[in-house]
Structure formats: C-alpha cells, structure tokens
Amino acid sequence: MTVMFDAALAALREIVSPPFRNVLLKSLGMTFLLLALAWVGLDKLALSYIALNHPWLQLAVTYAAGLGLFLFLAFLIGPISVLVAGLFLDDLADVVEADLYPPGARGRAIPATQAMLMGLRFAAVSAGVNILALLLLLVPGVNALAFILANAYLLGREYFLFAATRFRPLDEAMALRRRYAPQLFFAGLFIAAFVATPGLNVLTPLFGVAFMSRIHKMLASGR
Image (tube, rainbow, N blue to C red):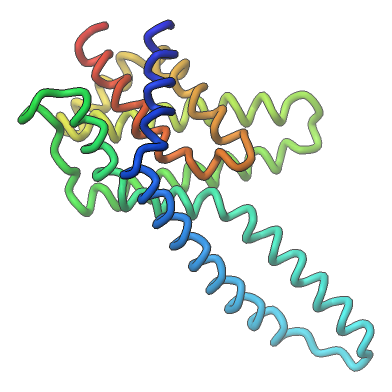
C-alpha cells in the first residue's frame, strides 16, 4: 500500500513538469475548440426547428435550448478531454519511463490504430461512468459511491492496460491485468479521486499515465 502512495506522489510531481504542462495546454485547447464548434453547430440546428410567432415565447424557448445545450456540452468535457489527451499518451509515457528505466529498456509506442481504439475506449468509459452517475443522482448515498467504484474499476484497468501494452503484446497485457485485478482496483481509486474532483478531472489522463506506468513497473517485477 505504501508503494502505491509513493507512486501517486511521484505522479503528482510529474504532471506539473513542462512536458506534461504542454500536453495539458494542447489538449485543453483542442477540447474547447471542439466544444465551441459543437456549440455553434448544434445551436444553429436546434434553432432551425424553433419557429414561434410570439416573440417572448420564442425568446424563452431560445434561452431554454441554450441552457440545455450548455449542460449537454459540460457533460461532454470529460470524455472529449480524455479522447483528445489520448493522442499524446505515448509521448507522456515515454517521458515517465525515461525516469523509471535505463536507456534502451523503455516501452515502444503503441501502433496508431490500436492507440486510436484505446483513446476511443477511454472516452467511452468516461462517458459511460458519467451517464451512470446521472442515472443514480436520485438515489441518495449511492450515486457518489457508485461513481467512485465504477471509475476505480474501469479506469484502473484501462490505464494499466495502456502502460502494459507498451512492453508486451495485448493478450499478455490483458493476462497481467487479470492477474493483478485487486491491486489495480485499489490503484484505480487514486484515479477515481481525480475524476471526482472538479477542476482536477481534466488532469486525469496525465495522472493516469504517470501513475500506472509506475504501478506497471512494480507489478511486472513482482513487487
């Protein structure tokens, strides 16, 4: 347990380093650009179907549509930022591994097609957990716990799989993930804490890579 806390602290220090800050700025910029384009397109589409004769009613419906669109896009910030950051995960993992491994022992970049599929899976997991949280909003005392546990389980698995795949074939990485499932669930709680904290949730991909790269090294060596 202590080594996981040490790995989490080391990952926190890593995500404020210049390479990670650069990726954060790029991913946030691309995320908000995509959201702005989506806002303009969906707003025009929604208003094209609204045609009321009464000006006050038209204004009220327009504002209601704008509010609904804002809430919808706010919900998408997490999944889209995860998807965009997925474009840079290999670069971040390479930075982390440079501190963990001797020269020549670092992992290999994941093939582009597989990396794209992983990025889509990260985004799908993020969206799915958020949808689950929305569905459980009306269940007091359960929604927050379900949100944390689902994130711990799913994101712990996915980020470890990414870190492991840089060193071994996908089937071997999945076997290693199954072998250490309890440890990965506990490690996933650290990532879930990021997801559950407003403002920090956009840092989840950065922390997930820095943290799970260290967890992979420990588990792969049998520690």
